[in-house]
Image 1 (cartoon, one colour):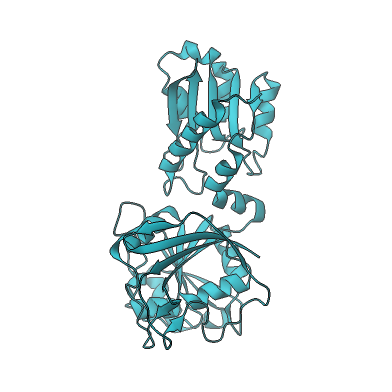
Image 2 (image 1 turned 60 degrees about the horizontal axis):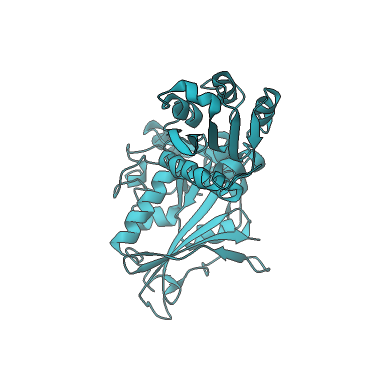
Length: 366
């Protein structure tokens, strides 16, 4: 039976789990606390990929191990049941004699998927499931999609003016938003496995696509360069981070490919069609490379393509208090791209402010 304090302690698990953002992928973000007589006596989180899991760290932090036999362990994701880079957490829980476990949601990984819960129950452990389940699933939405649909989680990032423009009539688009918004975008990059942009955006801005305005790892840079036309000196090909270029299969024998390969750039050649590269094939290749989340910063053309193909999951829209006027370029009116005939429903989160800009965060429902 769920108790009144279960949600309170699960919320703490979620707070701890967030500390692993951008550090544990392709593993999930997990936090855990150990409670004895209503008091937290141990807590931990999954700190880095390949390191100890949250439950291991939480149990290790308990000073008096004898109290574990009269404690409850909380964890936002089902304890693992198999040997991976670390031993099974469910075995550790059983060995330490913890009698009650409260979980947020099940782990969809094929090696677990209920097996951790089953092992605990078979050992006589009381298991309470589904406490803050929606919040737990949202925290690891990329991990869950990756293991249930075999595709990365895709978020689109766009910036526009109040009148819905992404660039002036001359094509200038840099710094629509303020410094605070740009810093938040760098934080986003640090949380995603990959950041993706199209050839036109990379060329126009000479985009580096790295994390610079905050602490955090650089994501893998993914460039959609259909005709393999970007200059060799483009910043995105620099040594700061790994770069994967997707191009049409027709380009696989071009001299440019050989030159970039010698510079350390990875290449994937995929099918294309009238409106660009086959994005489902692109995502499939990223899935095979264990990339579970992608932040698309490629501007309106690439964003519209992802929406048209029903491959985008989330949208971050930064709106700046500016007006560019009627001749400027609109957010979802790029040349040569058709949008879906049916309406695309959006489910907005609470708006956030960064300086004078507004961030609208929304899930995309097709």
